[in-house]
Image 1: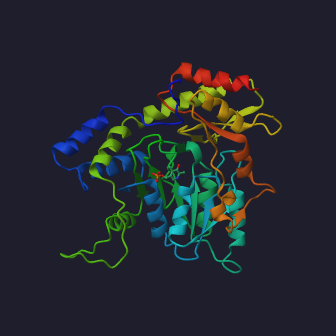
Image 2: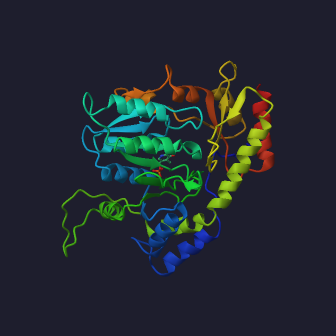
Image 3: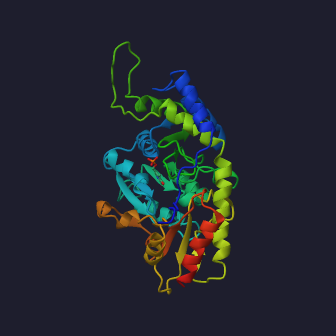
Length: 377
Ligand SMILES: *Cc1c(COP(=O)(O)O)cnc(C)c1O
C-alpha cells in the first residue's frame, strides 16, 4: 500500500515540545498556568484583538459566543448554510432556532443579499427579530465581511465569526475573527495549526471574555466554598495543550505559505482544464488556503465521488464539500433563505471536492494526485 496522503494532518516542530517540557518541569500540567495565559496573549496579539479565552474546543468557543450573545429558547440565529455542523449546533444547545443563509459564488460564504432578505422576513413584526448572525470563513477564504457587518449594524444584531478554518486569513489586511462582536478559532487536529484539540474565543469586550472564562471553569462564584449562581461548563484549555499551541503559533505563517503553494500548484495544473476551477476568494482578501478545493463544471460527466474513489484506491484522502445545513435531516424543519431560485450551497456541494492540502505532502505526491485527476477527464 502506498504511504497515505492526508487532507490536512498535524505538522509538529520542536518548540511545541519545549513548552510541554516547561509545563512538566514546573508541574503546571493542569489546570491552567503560564502557557494558557501566554497563548491567549500571543494569539490575541496575532489576530489583532484585545481579549481571548483559551478553551477545550472551537465548538466550546462557539457555544459560549452564542450564550454571551444572549441567545435563548426560540431565538432566531441567522447562520451560514454551507459549513460544518459545529458552526450551528451551539444554537440548538441553547434551544434557539437556526435560519440558514445561502452562499454566494465569489467566496462560497454567506451571501449578503440573502442575509438582507432574511432580515426583511424576520422583521420583528411578522416574525421575531434575529438575535445573532453566525458566519463562517469556509476553507480559509474570507467572506464578504464589510457587507455582512454593515447589515448586522443596520439591524442592531450581534455578529459572530466562525474563523475555525481561517486563522491567518485576512480581509483588506485585517485578520478574520476580529470583525465580529465575537470570533472563534479552532486548534483541532486538521486545522492550520493544532493543539491536538482546542479553541479560542476572542472579542474586544473584556467583560465578555472574563465571563467566558468564568463559565468555562464551572461558573464558581467568588466565595471560599463552592457556590454557583449560574450553570457552568468544563471548557477550559489545559496548560499542556496551550504549550503545543504556543509552539505552533510561531509556525503559523510558514504553514500558510506552504498551503498557498499547494493551492497554486493545483491551480496552475488545472489552468488548461475548463471543466475544473478552484475554490475562489475575494480580491480584497488573502485566504490561508487551509484546504484546496475544486469545482467541476455542471456539464461534465465526471463527478466528485468518482475522483474521491479513484484517489482512495491510491490511499489518498479527499473529502466532499460540507453538506449544506438546510439539507441535513436534523435541520429539516429549519428555514432556509436564498437570493436565488436554486441553492448555491447545494450546487457547490454537488460539484465540489476538497483535495489533499497537507503541508507535508511532497511535490511528487501532489503531481501524482494531479495526474490521477487529469487522467479522468
Ligand atoms: C473545525 C471546525 C469547528 C469546530 O472546531 P473544534 O475545535 O473541532 O470544536 C467549527 N467550525 C468550523 C467551520 C470548523 O471547521
